[in-house]
Length: 329
Image 1 (tube, rainbow, N blue to C red):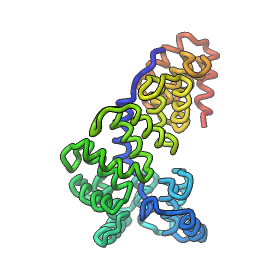
Image 2 (spheres, rainbow, N blue to C red):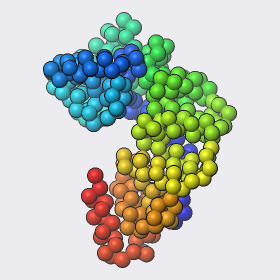
Image 3 (cartoon, rainbow, N blue to C red):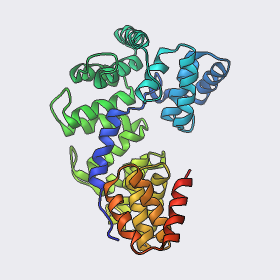
Image 4 (spheres, helix red, strand yellow):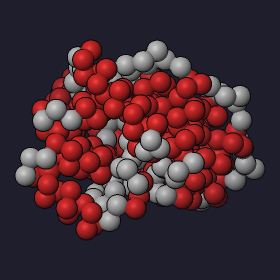
């Protein structure tokens, strides 16, 4: 089965995903240390909604704790139940809960009041509201204004999002060099999405000179933090020899990490590796299983390839692959 080079489209998707689903930063950015987190955790476990919301932010961005989105959602739900409007906003933004119009109005009012006082987290959240139209009329120009205010105070998430606005030309003129400038600031603070974006910029030669060695360096930083899109792109780098010697074992390893997180394109590439025996033992059952999982997410290439591979399998083999797909995770 022919391998598919999707790195360009996936790197573009990184920018889109991060713009649409930004990871909110804890107030103060990455300055939160283990001692701060311990205090926040104690208060959160004692039922303080504000601390529960802050602990959710910490888990979502991996500040002072290992990044864990499911734990972030859990703490935000606790905070939301206690009436914390920031938690309600982020749950709604991440499609976890619906907000009442009263809650939306309350959240935006709070964000604006705090943002006007110079609070970077509130400025960033207000920017998110304007970029998405959540609680306000969608307005990219206003989003840029608030992202910039937070970014200039060092908020890494706002820096990354401001970079995305320049990359796509939303609310500002498209400017890859300016996008890279802000991505680098966020990446230097450890924001995985920004590191991946820089990897994409170096691969594509947008805003910087094309340099696949640098691309791999930034992709690896993001991949090591568990960012699935970066793991996929790092796998593609090894698959094609972009910035590193071609190595199918390494490519399969990184595809697997991203596939295990549910990234459809990684599941597709891992299925191809199993079909061809590239970096993993040749196994059509596992190949079909990963195709089945990718196809379930609407990956068109997976749907087509699943039909093709089925022609070389017995009905028992297909049934076993479908069972593995159903029982996956």
